[in-house]
Structure formats: C-alpha cells, structure tokens
Image (cartoon, rainbow, N blue to C red; front, side):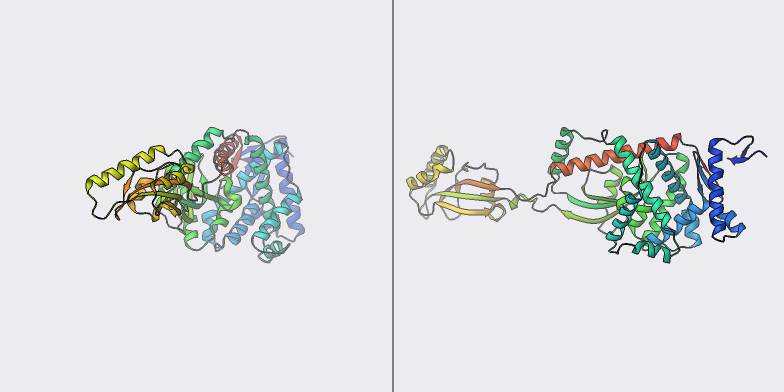
Length: 442
C-alpha cells in the first residue's frame, strides 16, 4: 500500500520522498518509545501530532509541551491553561527557529558534543549556586525531561558557532570606527551609563505583527507579575544576548536605536519598558542600573599650582596697581617652564611666592579657576589682582585629569563588534526562514 503523507492539507500519494520517509521514521520511533513507557494509544496520538514541519524534520506537539513545562518552570510563570494558550505559538516558533539553526549548523559541518552540553549545564548550575547534578534532579522533581534542556542548549551552542564562523570577519570594525566611538563617548561623559537587558521578538513577515505584539504584551504582563527577566529572555528573545539573559552590559546613550534610547531616557532603575517597535521587531527593555561617570566634572582636575606675588600696600592707588600688573606681565613673558620659577621668585623677593601644592580646581575661587583652568603645564596666567591686594601670577606645574572610566579600545571594539554581529545574525536567521520549508499546523 502506498504511503500517504499530508502536508499543508494536501495528500502526497505514491512512493514517499526521502523527506517523507524520514518524518515517518521519526514518528514511528517516538510511538515505540511512548508505548514502551506505557502511554495509552489516544494519549500517544495526541502528543505525537505534528506541530510543525521544518524542511525534512518534525517538531511534535510533545516537543511543544515539554518546552512549555520548562519555560514555565524556569521563568516562574504559573503553568496555567491560559498561559499555555497565550504562549504556545511563540514557543512553537522558537522551536522551529532552533530546528533551522541545528540544520544549518549540520550543513556547515559544525557539531556539538555531549561534553559541550554538559559544560553548559554545569555553567547554569554554578550561576545558580547549585552542585553538579542538582539541576537534573530539580527538573525531574518537576517532571521535566533533561533532554528538553539539552536540546535547547545544543541549539544555542550550535548557532553561536555557526554565526561566529560565517559572520565574524564581516562583523569586524575599523580603527576609524573605534576612534569615532571613543570620541563620541568622551563628548558625552556627563551622560549616565546604563546597565540594560533586552528581549527581542523579531518580525520578518508583516502578517506576524499582531501576533508578535500580543506576545510582547503577555511577556510584559508576566514581568509585572514577578517573572524573571533573564529567564524570559533565555526562553523567548531572538537576540544573540538571549544566552546571557538579554544582558547588554554597560552602555551609553546612542549605542541603541533612537526608539530604544528614547524609551530608556524616561525609565528608572528596575523599570521594564512597554513593547517598543523597531525595524527588527518588538523589544522589552529592563533598566538594571544607571550611573554617572565618576569624576567627569572638570572641577575634579587636580593641579600643581605655583604663584609669584607682587605686593601692594593697603590702599594702593590705581597707578601703583597698574605698575605691579605691568611688572607681573613682564615676568610672565619670561616664563618658559616651571624650571624658571625659582630664579624669578627670588628676583621678586616676596615670601608669599612659591608652591601652593596640589589643589583641586573646583576648590579655588572663581576668578582663579578662570585664570588657570585652561593653562597648559609650565604656562603662566594673566596677572590676577586678588581681593587681599597683591597682584599674582599663577603657574601650573602639573595637571591630573579626573578619572573618567572611559572604556578602553578593546571594550569599544567589542561593543561595536557585538552590535554589528547582532545585526548580521538576525539577517542570517531571517534568510534561513525565507528559504526553509516550514509548515505550522493549527
């Protein structure tokens, strides 16, 4: 008897294709396992229904159920029928994406060993302060198969290696781009740094707009109800940051898109944004912390300050003051550096002349700040008439700029590379979706 395989509601009769034979073999294999475990025929029939076909591979309803249980557990989301109904389509699309990623990795001859997955599980345990083996025991206690987690981690590792091999050279940034970004960061030192996490739900097809927006709103509701942001990001986000819980690290305004920057500007630490639409899809942002760059105030500059004092008697006339100012200006023109000062101070012969030590610029009177604030080391100020009477020349003999916490070139390079890498990775997955045969069943 000819095998009949229904795809998209149409029977394909006759000798089954290689893809069809593989799908049938998968179904038969799972049936055998379920019956061996004592599953009733009707129960087996329900969970073995095909949820999606991805090229020549099947995602079953059982796969969706098992992932649903894991997501509810890992995010702290109540495992209710309503939550299952609301999130089932997004979970199915996540499983479809992972299947495409695994198929692409295989095409690129990229493999993930059991040891790789074991190491990833151990990392999860360490992150949650668990002993080796505790995570599997915890999942078993919740009737969740460890195979579900292993399959998820396999897809993450495989996709990371695939995009790294294929796109890393394209994601490189030039020295000029790094210089420009450093200059931009330095020009915005008064702006706060932000610790931000993200969830991205991508949109490749305009027909997905309403569904994806509804999913984003449901995730926001779950976050408002106390679900863990990082866990939801690991389960649902389509950004490359998903594996680290959506963490973007410390960033400054301008690194994200205009829409995201505008949303963050009105947020306080601990806030989660409403869904934000960008060209990539819908974003949820979590502002974890905000801090002003330490020491970015120019008043924190410390200078080694010397002075040459030209005395004036109390009640000196305007002519006497002008004469001392002229004398001070003549000395000023003779100063070529701080090594000249001892002899010049001796020639003036005032005991008040000499070193004032290291002084914070912001602690000086405003008129002196104005006179010395922009001087280079070894340069003398214009004569300053002090409130106490004398005319004074100030010379800066050292300057220590405030600590700015500017990122180094490597940090900026990594940020720009990751931003470029994220864009290319999304394009790569979008191309896979467009070229794949995907049949989502109702």
